[in-house]
Length: 305
Ligand SMILES: Cc1cc2nc3c(=O)[nH]c(=O)nc-3n(C[C@H](O)[C@H](O)[C@H](O)COP(=O)(O)OP(=O)(O)OC[C@H]3O[C@@H](n4cnc5c(N)ncnc54)[C@H](O)[C@@H]3O)c2cc1C
Image 1 (cartoon, rainbow, N blue to C red):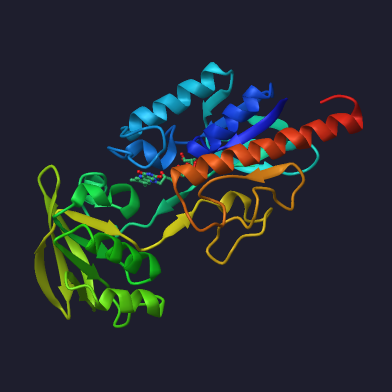
Image 2 (image 1 turned 180 degrees about the horizontal axis):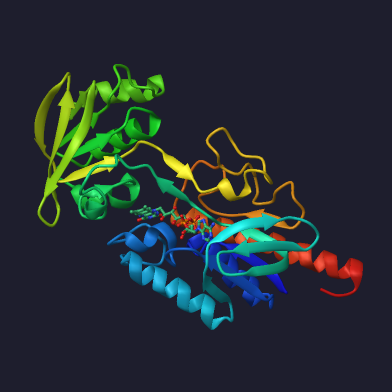
Protein backbone atom coordinates (compact mmCIF):
# COMPACT_ATOMS: atom_id res chain seq x y z
CA UNK A 1 0.00 0.00 0.00
CA UNK A 2 1.44 3.37 -1.07
CA UNK A 3 0.52 6.82 0.23
CA UNK A 4 0.66 8.38 -3.24
CA UNK A 5 0.50 6.89 -6.73
CA UNK A 6 1.57 9.24 -9.53
CA UNK A 7 0.67 8.49 -13.14
CA UNK A 8 3.21 9.96 -15.54
CA UNK A 9 6.97 10.36 -15.18
CA UNK A 10 7.26 13.76 -16.88
CA UNK A 11 8.38 16.97 -15.12
CA UNK A 12 5.00 17.37 -13.34
CA UNK A 13 4.83 13.79 -12.06
CA UNK A 14 8.46 13.66 -10.95
CA UNK A 15 8.21 17.03 -9.18
CA UNK A 16 5.14 15.73 -7.35
CA UNK A 17 7.15 12.61 -6.44
CA UNK A 18 10.03 14.70 -5.07
CA UNK A 19 7.70 16.77 -2.87
CA UNK A 20 5.83 13.68 -1.59
CA UNK A 21 9.02 11.78 -0.82
CA UNK A 22 10.43 14.77 1.08
CA UNK A 23 7.22 14.75 3.16
CA UNK A 24 8.05 11.13 3.99
CA UNK A 25 5.21 9.63 1.95
CA UNK A 26 5.59 6.22 0.32
CA UNK A 27 5.40 7.21 -3.32
CA UNK A 28 5.35 5.41 -6.65
CA UNK A 29 5.48 6.86 -10.18
CA UNK A 30 4.20 4.93 -13.20
CA UNK A 31 5.72 5.82 -16.57
CA UNK A 32 4.77 3.90 -19.68
CA UNK A 33 7.39 5.18 -22.11
CA UNK A 34 10.13 7.61 -21.32
CA UNK A 35 11.19 9.18 -18.02
CA UNK A 36 11.10 12.95 -18.42
CA UNK A 37 8.10 12.94 -20.75
CA UNK A 38 8.01 15.34 -23.69
CA UNK A 39 11.12 17.25 -22.66
CA UNK A 40 13.44 14.25 -22.90
CA UNK A 41 13.65 14.59 -26.69
CA UNK A 42 14.63 18.25 -26.97
CA UNK A 43 18.26 19.13 -27.67
CA UNK A 44 18.33 22.28 -25.57
CA UNK A 45 16.20 23.91 -22.87
CA UNK A 46 16.93 27.58 -22.38
CA UNK A 47 13.92 28.92 -20.48
CA UNK A 48 14.03 26.92 -17.28
CA UNK A 49 15.33 29.17 -14.49
CA UNK A 50 18.66 28.10 -13.08
CA UNK A 51 19.91 26.47 -16.28
CA UNK A 52 21.41 28.67 -18.99
CA UNK A 53 21.11 25.71 -21.34
CA UNK A 54 20.55 22.03 -20.69
CA UNK A 55 19.93 19.09 -22.97
CA UNK A 56 16.46 17.49 -22.52
CA UNK A 57 17.88 14.01 -21.94
CA UNK A 58 20.22 15.32 -19.20
CA UNK A 59 17.35 17.24 -17.62
CA UNK A 60 15.21 14.06 -17.62
CA UNK A 61 18.03 12.00 -16.18
CA UNK A 62 18.51 14.58 -13.36
CA UNK A 63 14.80 14.42 -12.58
CA UNK A 64 14.97 10.62 -12.37
CA UNK A 65 18.07 10.60 -10.17
CA UNK A 66 16.70 13.21 -7.79
CA UNK A 67 13.41 11.32 -7.27
CA UNK A 68 15.02 7.89 -6.92
CA UNK A 69 17.63 9.25 -4.45
CA UNK A 70 14.77 10.48 -2.28
CA UNK A 71 13.24 7.00 -2.24
CA UNK A 72 10.52 7.32 -4.89
CA UNK A 73 9.74 4.04 -6.66
CA UNK A 74 9.63 4.59 -10.42
CA UNK A 75 8.31 1.75 -12.56
CA UNK A 76 8.01 1.46 -16.32
CA UNK A 77 4.40 0.31 -16.52
CA UNK A 78 1.39 1.69 -18.35
CA UNK A 79 -1.61 2.51 -16.19
CA UNK A 80 -4.68 1.00 -17.83
CA UNK A 81 -7.35 1.74 -15.25
CA UNK A 82 -8.02 3.65 -12.04
CA UNK A 83 -10.67 2.57 -9.54
CA UNK A 84 -11.60 5.53 -7.32
CA UNK A 85 -12.83 5.20 -3.73
CA UNK A 86 -11.38 5.84 -0.29
CA UNK A 87 -8.54 3.52 -1.25
CA UNK A 88 -7.73 3.90 -4.94
CA UNK A 89 -6.64 0.98 -7.08
CA UNK A 90 -4.47 1.31 -10.16
CA UNK A 91 -4.25 -1.45 -12.73
CA UNK A 92 -1.20 -1.49 -14.95
CA UNK A 93 0.01 -3.77 -17.72
CA UNK A 94 2.01 -5.56 -15.04
CA UNK A 95 0.01 -5.52 -11.82
CA UNK A 96 -2.30 -3.85 -9.35
CA UNK A 97 -1.42 -1.15 -6.81
CA UNK A 98 -3.26 0.70 -4.06
CA UNK A 99 -2.98 4.06 -2.29
CA UNK A 100 -5.18 6.68 -0.66
CA UNK A 101 -4.19 9.37 -3.16
CA UNK A 102 -3.51 9.54 -6.89
CA UNK A 103 -1.87 12.35 -8.87
CA UNK A 104 -2.69 12.37 -12.58
CA UNK A 105 0.28 13.79 -14.52
CA UNK A 106 -0.24 12.11 -17.89
CA UNK A 107 0.67 15.16 -20.00
CA UNK A 108 -0.25 15.89 -23.59
CA UNK A 109 1.14 15.29 -27.06
CA UNK A 110 1.59 17.80 -29.87
CA UNK A 111 -0.34 16.84 -33.00
CA UNK A 112 1.78 15.88 -35.97
CA UNK A 113 1.17 16.09 -39.70
CA UNK A 114 1.80 12.33 -39.96
CA UNK A 115 4.34 12.63 -42.77
CA UNK A 116 7.43 10.50 -43.39
CA UNK A 117 10.59 12.00 -41.78
CA UNK A 118 8.54 14.09 -39.37
CA UNK A 119 9.54 12.34 -36.13
CA UNK A 120 13.18 12.16 -37.31
CA UNK A 121 13.39 15.97 -37.58
CA UNK A 122 11.76 16.83 -34.24
CA UNK A 123 14.43 18.84 -32.45
CA UNK A 124 16.37 19.05 -35.75
CA UNK A 125 14.32 21.74 -37.43
CA UNK A 126 10.82 20.70 -36.47
CA UNK A 127 9.60 22.21 -33.26
CA UNK A 128 6.41 23.15 -31.43
CA UNK A 129 7.24 25.90 -29.00
CA UNK A 130 8.55 29.26 -30.24
CA UNK A 131 9.31 30.59 -26.76
CA UNK A 132 11.40 27.42 -26.15
CA UNK A 133 13.16 26.99 -29.51
CA UNK A 134 12.53 30.19 -31.49
CA UNK A 135 15.94 31.69 -30.69
CA UNK A 136 17.69 28.80 -32.50
CA UNK A 137 16.30 30.17 -35.79
CA UNK A 138 17.39 33.79 -35.44
CA UNK A 139 18.05 35.34 -38.87
CA UNK A 140 16.78 32.22 -40.70
CA UNK A 141 13.61 31.33 -42.64
CA UNK A 142 10.88 29.31 -40.93
CA UNK A 143 7.41 27.99 -41.59
CA UNK A 144 4.59 27.95 -39.06
CA UNK A 145 1.86 25.42 -39.76
CA UNK A 146 -1.64 26.19 -38.49
CA UNK A 147 -4.26 28.90 -38.61
CA UNK A 148 -5.59 29.52 -35.11
CA UNK A 149 -4.40 31.76 -32.24
CA UNK A 150 -1.33 29.67 -31.38
CA UNK A 151 -0.09 29.57 -34.97
CA UNK A 152 -0.56 33.31 -35.45
CA UNK A 153 1.04 34.11 -32.08
CA UNK A 154 3.98 31.92 -33.09
CA UNK A 155 4.22 33.67 -36.48
CA UNK A 156 4.29 37.07 -34.77
CA UNK A 157 6.91 35.90 -32.30
CA UNK A 158 9.14 34.47 -35.02
CA UNK A 159 8.72 37.54 -37.26
CA UNK A 160 10.78 39.48 -34.70
CA UNK A 161 13.61 36.94 -34.96
CA UNK A 162 13.59 35.57 -38.49
CA UNK A 163 14.38 36.83 -41.96
CA UNK A 164 11.17 35.34 -43.36
CA UNK A 165 8.19 33.58 -41.82
CA UNK A 166 5.71 31.54 -43.89
CA UNK A 167 2.37 30.84 -42.25
CA UNK A 168 0.98 27.73 -43.92
CA UNK A 169 -2.73 27.16 -43.45
CA UNK A 170 -5.11 24.83 -45.28
CA UNK A 171 -8.14 27.11 -44.83
CA UNK A 172 -9.14 30.38 -46.47
CA UNK A 173 -9.48 32.54 -43.33
CA UNK A 174 -7.31 32.47 -40.20
CA UNK A 175 -9.22 31.44 -37.07
CA UNK A 176 -7.51 33.88 -34.72
CA UNK A 177 -8.44 36.96 -32.69
CA UNK A 178 -8.70 40.16 -34.72
CA UNK A 179 -5.88 41.89 -32.80
CA UNK A 180 -3.52 39.05 -33.71
CA UNK A 181 -4.58 39.17 -37.34
CA UNK A 182 -4.06 42.96 -37.46
CA UNK A 183 -0.62 42.51 -35.92
CA UNK A 184 0.26 40.02 -38.63
CA UNK A 185 -0.79 42.42 -41.40
CA UNK A 186 1.84 44.90 -40.19
CA UNK A 187 4.67 42.39 -40.55
CA UNK A 188 6.49 42.72 -43.84
CA UNK A 189 8.46 39.51 -43.39
CA UNK A 190 5.39 37.28 -42.89
CA UNK A 191 3.76 35.61 -45.89
CA UNK A 192 0.46 33.81 -45.34
CA UNK A 193 -0.03 30.80 -47.64
CA UNK A 194 -3.74 29.99 -47.61
CA UNK A 195 -5.24 26.77 -49.04
CA UNK A 196 -1.85 25.17 -48.45
CA UNK A 197 -0.82 21.91 -46.80
CA UNK A 198 2.65 20.54 -46.13
CA UNK A 199 3.00 17.22 -47.96
CA UNK A 200 6.72 16.43 -47.76
CA UNK A 201 9.63 17.10 -45.42
CA UNK A 202 13.20 16.97 -46.76
CA UNK A 203 16.72 17.09 -45.36
CA UNK A 204 19.80 15.03 -44.52
CA UNK A 205 20.45 15.30 -40.78
CA UNK A 206 18.39 18.45 -40.28
CA UNK A 207 15.32 19.96 -41.89
CA UNK A 208 16.27 21.73 -45.13
CA UNK A 209 13.14 21.98 -47.25
CA UNK A 210 9.40 21.38 -47.19
CA UNK A 211 6.99 20.77 -50.02
CA UNK A 212 3.51 22.21 -49.76
CA UNK A 213 0.48 21.72 -51.96
CA UNK A 214 -1.64 24.73 -52.94
CA UNK A 215 -4.64 24.42 -55.24
CA UNK A 216 -3.40 21.04 -56.47
CA UNK A 217 0.13 22.26 -57.26
CA UNK A 218 3.28 21.36 -55.35
CA UNK A 219 5.78 24.05 -54.28
CA UNK A 220 9.20 23.70 -52.65
CA UNK A 221 10.16 25.98 -49.80
CA UNK A 222 13.65 26.17 -48.29
CA UNK A 223 13.24 26.66 -44.53
CA UNK A 224 15.52 25.81 -41.64
CA UNK A 225 12.69 25.54 -39.14
CA UNK A 226 9.07 24.45 -39.07
CA UNK A 227 6.84 25.00 -36.06
CA UNK A 228 3.77 22.78 -35.90
CA UNK A 229 0.93 24.75 -34.30
CA UNK A 230 -1.92 22.40 -35.06
CA UNK A 231 -2.95 21.65 -31.51
CA UNK A 232 -2.23 19.16 -28.78
CA UNK A 233 -3.97 15.99 -27.66
CA UNK A 234 -4.44 15.72 -23.91
CA UNK A 235 -3.55 12.29 -22.55
CA UNK A 236 -6.69 11.95 -20.46
CA UNK A 237 -8.63 8.96 -21.82
CA UNK A 238 -7.72 7.14 -18.60
CA UNK A 239 -9.85 9.48 -16.49
CA UNK A 240 -12.60 10.37 -18.96
CA UNK A 241 -15.20 8.47 -16.91
CA UNK A 242 -13.94 9.69 -13.55
CA UNK A 243 -13.15 13.40 -13.92
CA UNK A 244 -14.80 16.28 -15.81
CA UNK A 245 -12.90 17.21 -18.98
CA UNK A 246 -12.93 20.39 -21.09
CA UNK A 247 -14.19 20.27 -24.69
CA UNK A 248 -10.54 19.77 -25.70
CA UNK A 249 -10.27 16.84 -23.24
CA UNK A 250 -8.09 18.55 -20.61
CA UNK A 251 -8.88 17.81 -16.95
CA UNK A 252 -10.89 20.69 -15.52
CA UNK A 253 -9.21 21.97 -12.37
CA UNK A 254 -8.36 25.52 -11.29
CA UNK A 255 -5.88 24.55 -8.59
CA UNK A 256 -4.77 20.91 -9.15
CA UNK A 257 -7.59 19.47 -6.99
CA UNK A 258 -10.46 17.52 -8.57
CA UNK A 259 -14.03 16.65 -7.67
CA UNK A 260 -12.83 13.15 -6.66
CA UNK A 261 -11.54 13.04 -3.06
CA UNK A 262 -7.84 12.21 -2.97
CA UNK A 263 -7.31 12.55 -6.75
CA UNK A 264 -5.18 15.48 -7.90
CA UNK A 265 -3.93 16.64 -11.30
CA UNK A 266 -0.70 18.24 -12.48
CA UNK A 267 0.97 19.42 -15.67
CA UNK A 268 0.03 19.56 -19.32
CA UNK A 269 -3.06 17.33 -18.90
CA UNK A 270 -4.72 20.08 -16.82
CA UNK A 271 -6.88 22.77 -18.40
CA UNK A 272 -4.66 25.88 -18.36
CA UNK A 273 -3.19 28.63 -20.53
CA UNK A 274 0.53 27.87 -20.63
CA UNK A 275 1.99 24.39 -21.07
CA UNK A 276 5.68 24.65 -20.20
CA UNK A 277 8.22 23.14 -17.83
CA UNK A 278 7.83 25.91 -15.28
CA UNK A 279 4.05 25.47 -15.11
CA UNK A 280 4.35 21.66 -15.08
CA UNK A 281 6.71 21.63 -12.11
CA UNK A 282 4.61 24.26 -10.36
CA UNK A 283 1.55 22.03 -10.76
CA UNK A 284 3.53 19.03 -9.51
CA UNK A 285 4.41 20.88 -6.30
CA UNK A 286 0.81 22.09 -5.84
CA UNK A 287 -0.72 18.65 -6.41
CA UNK A 288 1.78 17.04 -4.01
CA UNK A 289 1.02 19.66 -1.37
CA UNK A 290 -2.70 18.91 -1.65
CA UNK A 291 -2.01 15.17 -1.40
CA UNK A 292 0.15 15.71 1.70
CA UNK A 293 -2.60 17.77 3.42
CA UNK A 294 -5.27 15.29 2.37
CA UNK A 295 -3.35 12.43 4.00
CA UNK A 296 -2.68 14.50 7.14
CA UNK A 297 -6.41 15.20 7.50
CA UNK A 298 -7.21 11.53 6.90
CA UNK A 299 -4.75 10.60 9.66
CA UNK A 300 -6.44 13.01 12.08
CA UNK A 301 -9.78 11.39 11.33
CA UNK A 302 -8.74 7.75 11.63
CA UNK A 303 -5.71 8.05 13.90
CA UNK A 304 -3.24 6.66 11.39
CA UNK A 305 -2.18 7.08 7.77
C1 LIG B 1 10.06 18.83 -28.46
C2 LIG B 1 9.59 19.61 -27.25
C3 LIG B 1 10.39 20.61 -26.74
C4 LIG B 1 9.98 21.34 -25.63
N1 LIG B 1 10.81 22.31 -25.15
C5 LIG B 1 10.46 23.00 -24.05
C6 LIG B 1 11.34 23.99 -23.52
O1 LIG B 1 12.44 24.23 -24.02
N2 LIG B 1 10.91 24.66 -22.40
C7 LIG B 1 9.68 24.44 -21.82
O2 LIG B 1 9.36 25.09 -20.81
N3 LIG B 1 8.85 23.50 -22.31
C8 LIG B 1 9.20 22.78 -23.40
N4 LIG B 1 8.35 21.83 -23.90
C9 LIG B 1 7.08 21.58 -23.20
C10 LIG B 1 7.33 20.70 -21.94
O3 LIG B 1 8.10 19.58 -22.30
C11 LIG B 1 6.00 20.25 -21.34
O4 LIG B 1 5.25 21.38 -20.98
C12 LIG B 1 6.23 19.38 -20.10
O5 LIG B 1 6.99 18.24 -20.42
C13 LIG B 1 4.91 18.94 -19.48
O6 LIG B 1 5.20 18.07 -18.43
P1 LIG B 1 4.13 16.99 -17.90
O7 LIG B 1 4.83 16.20 -16.88
O8 LIG B 1 2.87 17.67 -17.55
O9 LIG B 1 3.75 16.10 -19.17
P2 LIG B 1 4.64 15.18 -20.14
O10 LIG B 1 5.99 15.72 -20.31
O11 LIG B 1 3.77 14.99 -21.34
O12 LIG B 1 4.75 13.80 -19.33
C14 LIG B 1 3.65 12.96 -19.14
C15 LIG B 1 4.15 11.53 -19.02
O13 LIG B 1 3.06 10.69 -18.67
C16 LIG B 1 3.22 9.45 -19.33
N5 LIG B 1 1.93 8.78 -19.40
C17 LIG B 1 0.81 9.19 -20.06
N6 LIG B 1 -0.19 8.30 -19.89
C18 LIG B 1 0.31 7.29 -19.11
C19 LIG B 1 -0.24 6.07 -18.60
N7 LIG B 1 -1.50 5.71 -18.86
N8 LIG B 1 0.55 5.27 -17.84
C20 LIG B 1 1.83 5.63 -17.56
N9 LIG B 1 2.41 6.77 -18.04
C21 LIG B 1 1.65 7.60 -18.79
C22 LIG B 1 3.77 9.83 -20.71
O14 LIG B 1 4.45 8.75 -21.30
C23 LIG B 1 4.70 10.99 -20.35
O15 LIG B 1 6.03 10.56 -20.15
C24 LIG B 1 8.72 21.07 -25.01
C25 LIG B 1 7.91 20.07 -25.52
C26 LIG B 1 8.33 19.33 -26.63
C27 LIG B 1 7.44 18.23 -27.18
